[in-house]
Image (tube, rainbow over all chains, first blue to last red; front, top):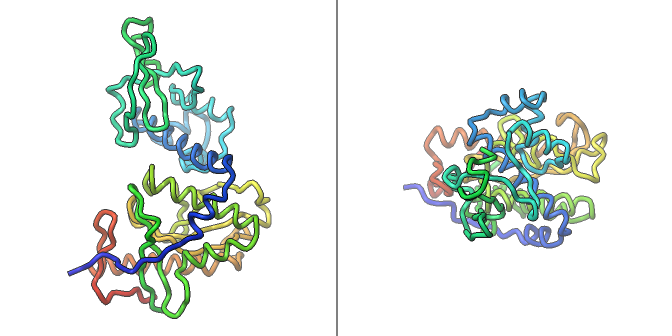
Length: 147
Length: 167
């Protein structure tokens, strides 16, 4: 009968080192992973492989894998190229949220809905750390802009 | 060399369980040794913190997906491919490397590493021993799995009471 590994070890340095990080370094690591994960998720939703995105962007697959690995220092130019190739918004600022994801298209367990509320005619849905707005049918954009 | 698998009690997250190994006769596990050695200067401390934050994020939010790791022979390493630390020049200093074995999206064995000082691993005296060790561990785990001495069940590594890796 096999058993779980029982012998444990504490690594106090692990937590201490994270606590000692500057806020900007923490934000960099967190955001780079969030962006990488979101690009990957959009690709999955669209049935795109790395090669498809590479072809659309005129880049090698190796370069695309950098975008998907986390800890990548994206430039605004590279984000613009990725958004253009995906036909979807990857980054948006809180005051200019205009991205439309049909609610029914968001099925991934990676993105839990934590709050829904109405802002005027625009239902806003918070997914984990992401904010995605869905246009209501009364507006002029009943069709999703992205995905 | 007799090696025991340990689980890392603070590194049990909703998406990943992290483990390490300890070589018989050595005072520290491989991952603890890496963490303590990388506290000696500011550059190491800063870079190991970034790697730790990455490990934590993967564990809490994303899972140990293949794309987050760089393949190194039969093992893996962090940070991911092509990441360059801001304070490493990429000519004689390629930044810290932490070698590991990614068994599944839920189970990762974190090992040891050091600062990489040459483009090719065979030319880096710092990292080559850790690279070789990680590959031996990966081989030994693969063999143990095929001989049914250990099995992976979700976040758990299950093994016989007397099981140790012999590398």
